Image (cartoon, rainbow, N blue to C red; front, side, top):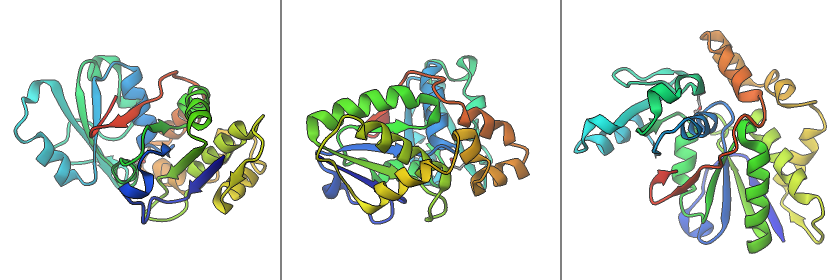
Length: 239
Ligand code: MLT
């Protein structure tokens, strides 16, 4: 039984993940946005590695049922219908829509993880449901890879904290468990913070969001178990 945490998706390859259960975490904010959109009735999310790719993917499609969404430096991309704020993903806006999403770290991490089976999307907002689903996959496969989206190719505290919480939950009752060093460090990290609000109050991404008046997204993303959906990424779509 083995759990590996990757603090960034750098160097991930599809063959390396083939047949392995994968969880992708990007608390601020792509995963939280994906989870919220699907919980509020979006039909699917198509993650794109770049904004150009998102535009290209929609080029020959009927525009009625789709929305382009994404951010650069936390702000909505010019010409896109939506940014990357979970608070924009209301039922009125997203219900029945397929959302093509391009973000700086989260959607490239998802694209990099697509060799996994299944690829689950997690954050604080669906944490309890994520633990249950990940536990079932882990029990079946004996192996789980937790990929943190990170920030600008570096470690992100909020993702590592969430990965640590997940490993800690999966460790319970599991004997003969092997952790890689990042998983051990992530579990250790969880002892330094009381909860997500505490952990997020110390991270750079939250500071950057507050600077552009998106601090409400941090509070939204820090509240655990708002939703019971665990989005799954397969065949280029998250549903
Ligand atoms: C990302 O995917 O890079 C993040 O979600 C950035 C953001 O907060 O929009």
